[in-house]
Amino acid sequence: MKSLWKEFIKYAVPSVIGMMVSALYIVVDGIFVGRGVGVSALGSINVALPVTTLMIAISMMITMGGAAIMSIKFGENKHEEGNNIFLESLFLIVAITGVLSIVSVIFPQEIARMLGASDELVVGTAEYLRYYMMFGIGFSGSLALSAFVRNDGNPNLAMISLILGAITNIVLDYIFIFVFNLGIKGAAIASGLGQLSSVFLLLTHFSRKKGKLKLYVPKLNKNDLIRILKVGTPEFIVQVSPAVSVFAFNIVIMSRIGEIGVAGFSIIGYISTVLIALFIGISQGIQPLLSYNHGKGDSDKVDKVFKMGVKTNFTASLIIYGIIFFFGKEIISIFNGDQGLIKLTYDAIIIYAFSFVIASINIVNVTYHQATENSKTANIISTSRGMVFTIVSLMVLPMIMGDIGIWVSIVIGEICTLLLIMYLAYVKKVDIQLKNKEILES
Image (cartoon, rainbow, N blue to C red):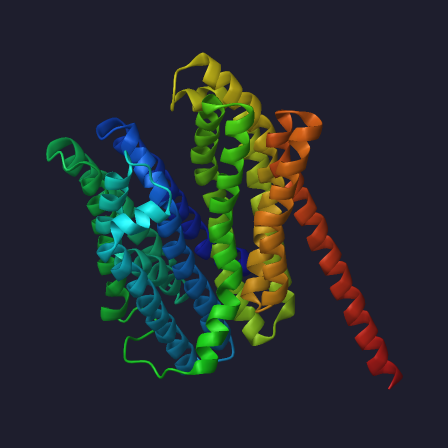
């Protein structure tokens, strides 16, 4: 058991650090743009969010699908097949995100209009999209290579690459925005160069032959490509859901509370980005162990690793909620000093943040089913959690409870998801018992 905890820490800790640093740099990036370029620049970046979210979602879908299958193949001692899965995943990422990047670079203004950019924001949105998507392959490559390098037994390099990318981005943000006055274009280029620095560092894993993976032209197999996309679909839903959820929350908050409510929710969003990254980091950290032992057929170890993930996430969520409850006002004041906004945001976040306690368990469950190729269950949980339960609650609760229902809706959404997970586990247990009974009777 001690050696299993050692393996857990080996993968989980670098994954958490990498995810947290990436999340923190998003917050710092927003501060640089907001103070150095202006509020309209933040608006332009927000309008462009669906395109950048789509690119990240596609990249993560293929990456997590391919990484899970690769680890399973390694567990089955089929290293050559696992290596080919890795290369086929890279091919899919380059092909799909490459087309998306080219279209965005050629037609940025048309896309900005489609995304609903106002006359005031359309130029900034188009400029940001064009320069951001010039580095589209770099963004996708950084996400993909960090996951595969981690699963190939080098989690520390994956972590360091994310830290390097974040630091490079922040330094270049300052230089391009405050020194060279490149505005929103500078922010996009800084982000792209930051991701490229991560890619170059991750490539040393292969040049120095640190693991089992090698780079060569893959043998493309239709069934492999479909399998990668199928296993990765839950991750796509996980990545897209927040954008859908934020859009719905913004509409309801604007209609009921107004601009101050949206401002408060944006602060909650920044804080949530960092905290959810912790839970996702732990979940992604255990994925290689889940997939590898699933491939070996060691269900006992799979269960132990899963329980480790649940316990760690749940414990972290309780500590986080305590920090928000006692120091929430101080944290919120970092973003803005307006006392009215601080009070509104604090009153909202002490309700909203309770959802993290439940979400910490739900996120591990999605990873567990994805890592063990139970895509159908993972898809059901992801869709229900990210869109169905929360959005339905958001539509109903404010009418019953008033404005407080807005913040309660996310909690109810997570609780409903947990109940669904428990129900699906019960159904699976009953099904196994019936099958065993049939085998004994026959």
